[in-house]
Length: 391
Image (tube, rainbow, N blue to C red; front, side, top):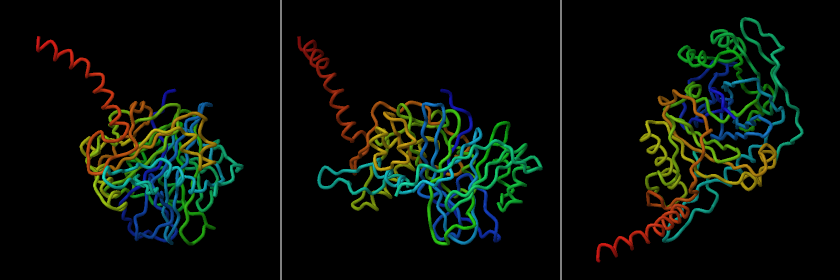
C-alpha cells in the first residue's frame, strides 16, 4: 500500500514560549505545545501519537491534547483527505499504559536495572460506542473555505476545514478565534491543495477550568503513517520531542532522508537515579539526531501489538490482531523541521529494548546475543586459517 505525500500527526515541544494573546483568540499551531509556566488552553500533552494501519485500507490516529490555563491556544493538523472524527474522547490513561508497556529499560551489571515503569521516552477506558462524523464538505463557510460544524470532543472542540488557498484559510481561522502569525503563512500555504483537509482544535466553551487531558481519535483513508514536521514549526521553540506509536503488519521505520537508529546507536547513558538517567538519555538522543543532520528517529522497540496494548482496550480495538507495534522517538531542533516524515520503511531485524548504563554500543541482551552468534559463525573459519598458517 502506497503512503500519501502529506501526513497526519501532532508534534510536541519540550520548549515553547508563547507571548500573551488577546482574550478569545486561539493560536493556530501544527501540534504546538505549551511549556511550563505559560498560560494556555490547548496543547499536545505528553508528546504521544498513536497510529494504526487497518486491513480495510484506513488508518486510525489517536493524539493527546492537554487543556489548561485561561488564555487560548489552538492546534492545526494538515490531513491528506477527509477525516472521520470520533466524538467520544479516549481516556489518556490508555496512552499512559501503552507508554509504560513499551518504555526502554536501563540496567547495570553491578547493581540495578530500571524496572519501575519510569518512562524513558521524550514523553478508565473511554466508551467505545461513541458517534463518528465523516466530513463531506456540505457546510459552506464562504470566502474560499468550506468548514464542518464545530464538534466537542471532551474539553476541546474541533472543526474540519478545506480551503482554496492559504490566505483564505488564515482569514477564516482569524475570524473564528484563531491567531496566525504573519511569518507562518508560507507553512500553511504549503499544505493547502486539492483534496487536502485540516483539523483545527481549541478549548470547548464548557471545558473545566482546571487542567485536563484528552485523547482525540479520527481515521483517514489509506496508509497514513507519517508526521507533518513542516507544520510542526508553527509555534515551536528551540527543539521539539516526538514519540510515535505505529501499529502495522511489520515493524516500522522512517524513510529517507531520516536515519533509523536503535539504542545501540546512542552514546553512553549515565545516571544513578531515574531523573538522572532520563536527562542523560534525552541528551544521547539529541546527540544522535544532531550527528545525522538533525533528521533521525530512534526505534525504542518493536512489540506484539496485542501484548503492548493489553492494558489499553480502546487502543487495542483500533489495532489489528497479530500486528506489530513500533515505538519511535526523536528530539529535533526547530530549524531542521523542513521535511515531512513517513514511517513506511521496514524496521531493523534486531531492535533492542534495553540499554546498559555507562556503556555505548551494542550492549543490550539482544545485541549481545547477536554478537555471540556472529563470533560462533566466525570461529570455525578462524580455526581453519590458524591451521593453514602453522603447516
